[in-house]
Image (cartoon, rainbow, N blue to C red):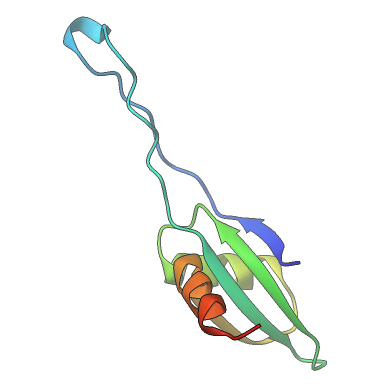
Length: 89
């Protein structure tokens, strides 16, 4: 099961309609990313990064929160779903 890391959140909700009357718009939905991490001691782990602005932001979250990282591979969760669907079971 992948670990979860959360990036900084900077979205703000807005009110719609005249004079603030009406439905509030939904907060901005940001993509989720999976990060495959290899540590300097050879250990490997998967992390799910939520609320990152893009893949570079997700990578920076990993590097800011973990020590002794040898390599990081980040991809959108939608790409992970497509890859998993292609693997025969």
